[in-house]
Length: 98
Image (cartoon, rainbow, N blue to C red; front, side, top):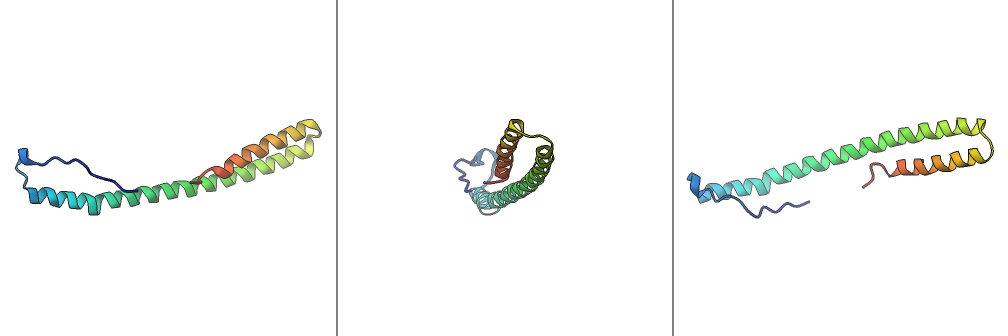
């Protein structure tokens, strides 16, 4: 993820020298923006990891519940429940993916 700084106040109306402006631009380009990008990527990665973990836990719970329902419900209702639950479990597998 790259960021392009296309416009920055020239500072002339505040008495800021062109060297100071150039220094601020270098800081933005070389230090601040890359740091923010890394922080964002780290937060996104952590969110996805936790989301996958919670989704796996939910998937296990759903499969356990489906097993209990399946043993007590027979016939067309059982097939419909199995099909619906399987579709929902597949959606849980997608959580946290890029």
